[in-house]
Length: 409
Image (cartoon, rainbow, N blue to C red; front, side, top):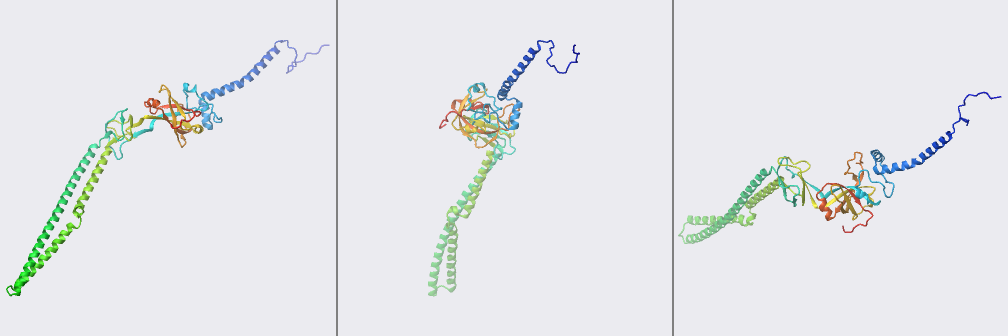
């Protein structure tokens, strides 16, 4: 007796369907899935390496948001900061111990801004006396302002006033000396008159005793002798006013001398004011940039820029977590496409403060809030001559922290 036909069950209970190739297809499907599972770690590792090397904007934003730094948890970071695009020739020789940072070429002492003199007011530039590339010394005149003529007139007026005061002083001295000589002569004359009056009084008294001279004549002789004595006293007092002190200590001479001092002070002030129209070099160096033209008011960024390019340096921004490995005397290599070749130097000093990053790449996703310490690098003579033509050029610096520091650099 045959079993009645039963409807198809929802599950395949292993009934023979007549398809002999089905088990083989299922085995191939399982093998593909196992292979895919094995490839996932390979893809993840490759993606991690590519992400750390190229650091796409999304990954950079993640680091900026979380505050993490690539390789920050390792003793030797395995990735560069995202702001630095390392040149190929430098990347080929990069060592794990090297510290890399963005750098800026600058003269020793940095660029000096030549501004308008203090007190120039609304004066405009009248004349530029130097050109870019000129070598000047400290104190050399670089430009003139248009208030020069007015200030020169003030100097001439002060010089004329001083000449008048000096002539007055000489005249006063002569007058005092003459007055003193006159007082001496008056005293001598009074003393002679007094001696004559005393002699006349003595003769009159003798005549009066013999009854020859009258009493009236005797009284007149006595009065003349007294008047002559008083004249001597008055002349002596007058002379004492001139002989009690030296000529230069006489009141009239002192007043005239003080007027001369005031005129000299006024002349010095006028000459100092004239310096407000003179733009002079603050340091020895080379003119790097001229920012103003005749007829223009001195710009806020200064009339010109200059610096001592005979000794070039580089300012390197080193991330704060890597500066501990940097020490003075360590060799430094700098590279930039404009230089055409690498330049070299040694670490001269390390900054004492942590600040915001100032040298930023063109990448809009660059971390401009990175905290860095500025390291000054002194370039060797050959590199300094090459870098003198590129003041302000941005470069990539590699500090070899594994090399021994050069003592005395």
